Image (cartoon, rainbow, N blue to C red):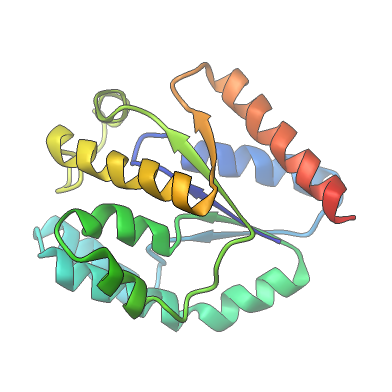
Length: 190
């Protein structure tokens, strides 16, 4: 099973993936974590380009290359257990799609593995930036830009039938919502 967490930076993806990984692992499930960008040379290049304010076309191509580079690893993990992913190609549509044609982004990612489920953690850009205030800023932490990214995510959520969770609620409430959803889909699939 392939479950992807999406949302703007500061929405709580990493926190919830870690929580869910530990919960599932403690109950005997075989669980893997997959993160974008990766720690590969391509992922390192992406991080460097983000820090150097690279254009959206370059970033979209690099993210697609990073996905393609790791596609066999992802498919193998999916065949062996539950994959919890921090982002997938939907992030490129949301982020780079602010400046680049979304159909072109879909085209360069047509090889990508489509998730079984997407959990979109919805927060306002103001809340997200506030949560990340202690971290180094990058080009994605501009509130006006993030408003457009969020609009893209909300459109995708409707078009692609994402599970949308209000991630501005308390962490305990968000964890419970995510856990209830995952327990339900595991029961449905067994």
